[in-house]
Image (cartoon, rainbow, N blue to C red; front, side, top):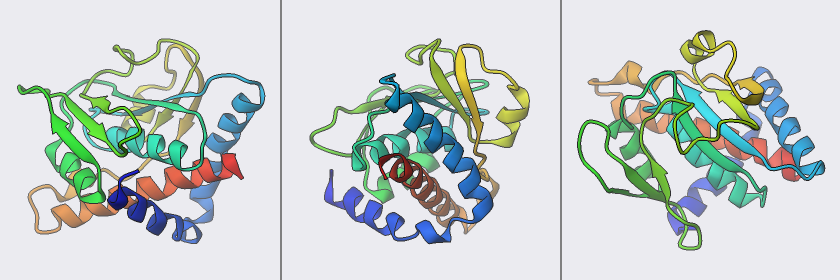
Length: 204
């Protein structure tokens, strides 16, 4: 793992006690699902879903991959939206500030990025898409709804064997304000902390 990511992860792990009880209830449900799948020798695939697949779902997708690596929990993570737009550059910048190495590999309205957090792990291709679009799995996965709008819009996710609601406040509330970068960094840290907590409970 890159040094910057390892330092960031270590800091977030020290913050587990700051996660309130109501959040832990939601996170523990996801931990239990992953644990039970592993006990049964079944693969674990998680699709993180928000409305536009532009901010929170990408952040959760990437941090869950980091958390799985950190705690040696074999999970494959994906992201999608109820509609596709683009991986928001503000969210991209926040992930870079956290230590990810991100390369834009295509231009246009919905660019593709390759995201890396370790020299030993393959790059993760990120672009905005609907939750049921390739390369996301079509069956035998868990859908993790990370925004209230997507949660309401998708009461059932076709192909999902399980569904969890773990909403995060959208950092776009601060777009164009002096608080913009700080808000994105705060949401990035929260998602990292909570995905690490989930995988720590599976491993522990």
